[in-house]
Length: 439
Image (cartoon, rainbow, N blue to C red; front, side, top):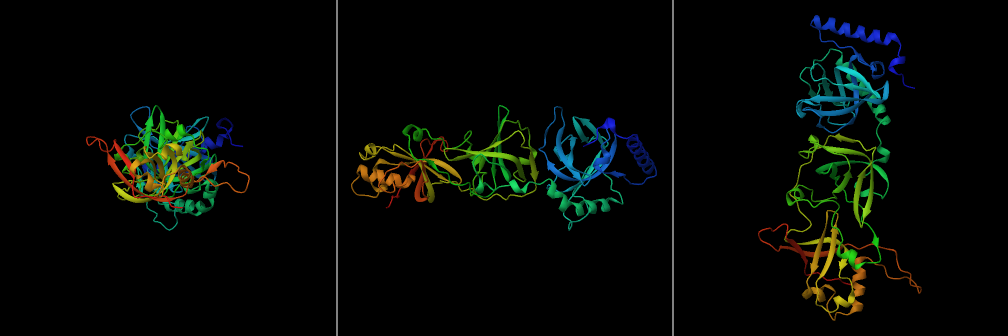
């Protein structure tokens, strides 16, 4: 059981006072020496200490309630593997620690141990300082970032090597690789961790939507076999608000962009501004809304940012002018054979691939060719529509209505056009041409 400050032995306080006195004497003598303590020994309320520790969690940079920017890290060492949080304040984000990766080592000078419910470390911008080192044993011993007031000590290299030696075993105590998934392995209602790239954050009414990507495609969903005309007519193309073309053009041209919803307010997340860093989301759950995957952050979902670089490629959306593409038909409207067999109506299909979902129209003059040519009968339409929508044929003599359907992937020719030349992107429509459903 952890010790409370009121129950600590008096010699702990005396040791902290002696360490502070020794540090003052060395400074007065012009020597850059620091008395590093373990996290377990440093848990003295009000004590000013120096620490060498491993970064286990990295929070988002946000505005404080005042004029400062703030970020919180969680650090661990061999003496205290559950870790202790360190809160930094600075006048600008450039002065805050920018940790490259979970597992890097941090040196903290003259930070204060405080307690509110639990112990935490406070970094004072007036007299505290820090340095960041890579956690890998084969990298250099020089820091990749230091604060303005940081001065190293001749024994820093020994402490750094000690942290790096312990790190491979210690990492096993706070990583959660067992629950880490790629988007291609999503399962409904499961809880998992996700390492991904954040391409956009939408904030509205204290709610946030993270648009994330890891380079893989989410699993293709199955749909209810019974088609409801009204449901097909009002089928949603995406979860959340529509994005502008400018934002869509920053998205990658392969892999699925998943929307993760949170009821937390996100204010000026500097790590996400220029699409440089990757992030780890903890304890995410996922569900489907008519085949669209939706992520949700739980109450126990902290966010950690890890290093990564993304070089954007020229965006290729699902439809740009004319192209031949591989898609699934999610829904059709109208789907009644009696209406389609007249040849006097347009057919609207809802198409999807791993990157997007759109409505595309088969013009009434193209209906006959779309259904394979020849005489357009209700029997032909039902057979072809069942095929393209993934409705299985009944097996055996007893007809049992299937509960789900799994649309196949089909090649489709698409063209895009606008209805209003003054607003070409908002008024853009899509049409299927030179495409036929074959048996």
